[in-house]
Length: 353
Picture 1 (cartoon, rainbow, N blue to C red):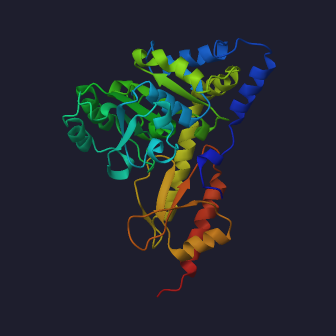
Picture 2 (cartoon, rainbow, N blue to C red; picture 1 turned 60 degrees about the vertical axis):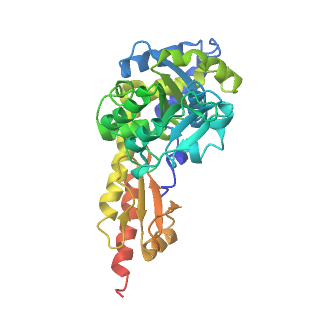
Picture 3 (tube, one colour; picture 1 turned 135 degrees about the vertical axis):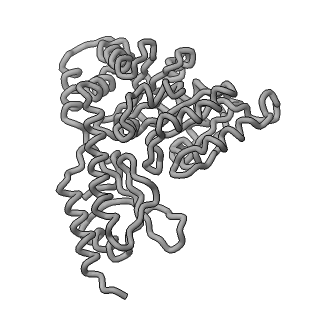
């Protein structure tokens, strides 16, 4: 019963087999000139209905985010993000390093989403061209958010309106983009460039890949520097086909979406079983595959004694013990049901006080 993180999940057999075939193919052009990398870009142009997009595989989500942002913000620029965003909390100042100094400006909002009205107000401040202030350059949103919620297309468009008004760029951290897309139920284009997104860091590692992400530029002008920044940053793989073979299999026949649908369904199954139990409550709506939930002490203890694995999480409400559970493409429904059975048994055994 491992619900610690989808980072801990294995790789989908189809992706492992695709890498094996790429190895078995023998020699191939290096540094991204191979047929697998070219095929991935063609496939993504079809998926996103954008025949002129540019796609660049990288190996980590951090690399995808910070290399993309480095193309959006100069060293004296400001990147606006949610306080809980991965770039603000979990990337060890990599955005500042790869942009050579751009500032991160936090803008709060409910359930991990930037408040578009707060953003509009801040972007309207008279700092443009004033040498004493960081210059607004980019906004970064996370899809799905670090609270497990998903932006709807109209929410992205509301943010994009302010971004466009002031000449900024809009970046999307899509480490769990497939999970968000599965929840929202629209076309990939509607959740990205049609809503105003300039560049997407699209994740695969959390959703069945061995270790592969892809940076997608919908704005071709922004892509002009990327290849040099990727090389300078040490993220240009000589055997790029081994990353691209993963991505090719990931996007083939809708595997990325079927993986995400399963992870989301397992999260909904957990929520449906846990929330009726006394003493439980959700911190945020569950849109994708992350659950943030308060569990009573006796239930948590019973689950821990049975070997269930999940992470503690801070709650803003005093006295509550909250936890994060994450489901994955390979989460076994029997483990979900075992978890729920233990939680329900713990409630039945609890002596009323």
